[in-house]
Amino acid sequence: MLGYLTLELRRALRASGTLLFTLVFPAVFYALESLLFSDSGSAVEPRQIMIGMSVWGTVTAGLLVGTRIVDERATGWQRVLRLTPLSGRGYLTTKVIVGVFVGLPAVIVVPVVAVLLDGVALTPRDWAFATVGVWIGSIPFAVLGVTIGLFAQKENVQTIVIVLMLALATLGGLFLPLNLLPEVWTSVAQLMPSYWLAELGLAGTDPVRAVPAIIILTAWFGVLALISLWRYRRVAERI
Image (tube, rainbow, N blue to C red; front, top):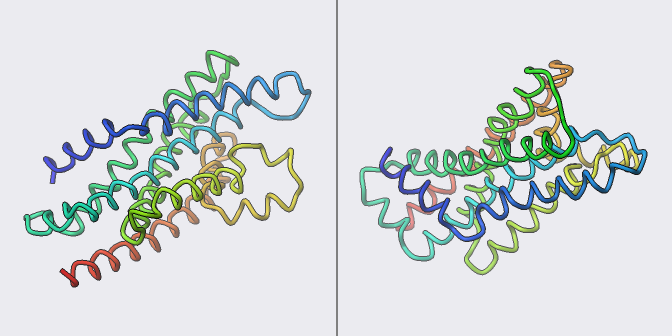
């Protein structure tokens, strides 16, 4: 499994668009939003924008797992892998690890940009939640990417990933701080797992805030993992 994991990591990092969507876009969007709100007199803190963009990068990294799985299904590579000693659980676990690893640069670079541009200064606990917390909490989104990859087809996977990427960011309150939007938007955002990942990132000032976020993200992980396992076995039975 270790050899396959290494192969997949190299493949993911070499893919065109991976670092663009998971690293460059979040960092650039942070800079743009920081500039937009800097002179507006609004109650928007750079920390909010920083965590929102970090979350967006990790979410995108997870969703992109789906496109790679669909490619493997279309080319027959997944069928070949089933003939090797690699188990189904090993295959799916590797995909999740890769998705989480690819999201790591976002939780490093976006905070660095925030420090350089706005002098963001947080306590060690705040930084732990904003970086390590967001990174580990992104696991359900890699599982979501796996689920997409097992259900989607070559013709529609790009559309599905883009729509979900924008929906999770927009409806989850990542692009615009929720305190600038109508209250109903917060109710909608709480239905999105991306909202709870951002809550986890902001929980450094109040660790109790992390409890519901962890519970909800764990529930998403459990449900999506069961669906992925069921779907993988279902597809394997047809071969």
